[in-house]
Amino acid sequence: MNEYLQARLRGFALKTLERRGALVEWPANADEGWAMCEPDMAGTLKSGELLRLSHRPESGGLCLNLATDFLDRMAPLAEAEARIGLFTIPDMYLKKSALDEMIARTFAWQNAKVKIKGTSAIRVEYHAWSFLAELHSEDTWEDVIQVTLNSASGAELDFADALELNGIVPHTPVVSSIPDTSRAATLRACARVEQRAAEFIARLEARRERDRKRLRDYYNALLKETNPRAESADAGNAKTEEKRRAVELELRRKQSELDERYALRASVTPLTWVRLDLPVLAVTCEVFRKQARREHKLYWNPVLTALEPLCCSRCGAGIFSVSFSDEQVLPLCNACAGE
Image (tube, rainbow, N blue to C red):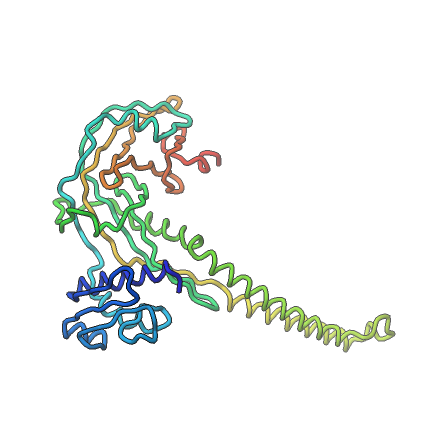
């Protein structure tokens, strides 16, 4: 198990145990740690109240390793966690100076004139989604994919864990009507699956091609046995031709079974949704494209301490090099603008 996966399992286990009331001690440079669990939790984990934590199966206790029963034991604790959270950070520092120069350095306007009309402090909800991505075939691949979107602009952001931000508190919004980001977040998650699973898919395809070659070699050998010797007088023998067709039919059937066995079945399932209300600076810009014009907002984010990208109106990519459509003056990435 690689270090990246170990770190993710460790982070998941420690956060889950602590949120469920355990006292956890596991120094970063130590091979193992300990958790003091309440009796109910110990019963759920099928362990004693003092629980050893380690990545090594032979250590006993709770082994943070996918080759063990780790996920099965942690599942009841994870399933008891809230799936939707509403939070806010009441106050954050917002940049005081004008953003004109920063916008000029950050964005490239490819085919339009952009005029800054004004800046205001507003509040925006950020939606942090997590998805369980699965690929099932001859083997199985699983990963958790996180997607964070500005619910107003639709732009995806490289956020830290929202629940780890300083000053975060539970929140009950006054207005319940919010933009639906579920479809956009799901599309972003789906787009990442192929990238994240590239090594898995490559291994699977290599195994399928290996098995196809073995089939071809085996049935080609049978075909040679069914054919008479070269230039034989019986070359047109009907019985030989019938055997040849039977072998070829069986080869196609076996290849079809092989393709079905290696076919990928994908699923992306939402796990959690965190709604985080933040103060931001919104910069209203008027965009002129030929005879059309439209207002767009740019956002300065206090968590990132930077301007957020615009969202391509076609593919949803975050963009700083921006083109605009002719009539509706909607932002486009370079790839979509060139279509």
